[in-house]
Image (tube, rainbow, N blue to C red; front, side):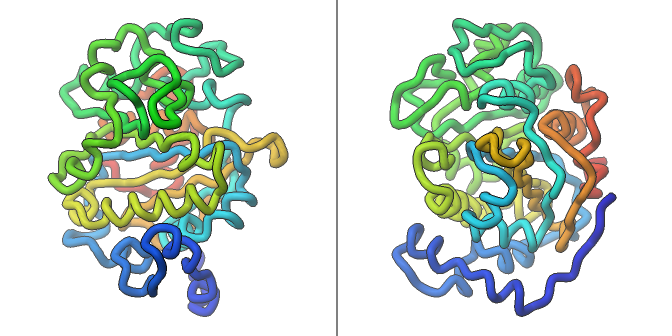
Length: 308
């Protein structure tokens, strides 16, 4: 079941972003910052029902629903402004099977965080599927030392958080379209965000090695860039933030946020999981969901996202 909730103004105003603003910009009022949830809601030049043709998934690490709500004030405020799921579950422990599930609709029998050399995955990912059918795709992996890097290195880059590197049949496409963060801002500003996209923070900014507050501040900075770009302003871009898994303390229930102008204080109680994200990629692209995602509950349907 889902329900729409009108949050009391006092509650929304009471959740401040002072720590996030200080971490991101050295202090100052959040009221005039274009990336605040309130500003995001008004920075749209077309109707809120504009069809979603681009999906950007952002993944943080190893925290439960309750931990993320408490430790990521910007992100939770964004969730309250737009939409979030209260019964969204990761599929496994540790990290890698969950990333593979989001990108490929299956965990492929993986139960550890080993390298692509140990877990070569055959067949299509959502990114390769997009390119095969004439769509665009990209993964932006922060700190990655070279395109489609298949080993840890660079600046806090972990290959287990970059699922496309595991899909060996798509290595050529991965080398062309799985890149560092260097192109992200320019792609946002030019309206070149891909139809199937993923944003992978480094192991500090995803809250694996640093605090949730650090991850929250990093995400706030990315949203400030996104809201100024034409994809968001036209209403064609949906941003989904989720976690790969919890820390084994919350039954693998995680916070998943859906930001798009069609969402307004939307709280979804329906059970969803990472296969629902795989399916959402397919729904945005107008393609068939991969593998187990074909039977997954529809995140687009649960949130009434205009994908067709």
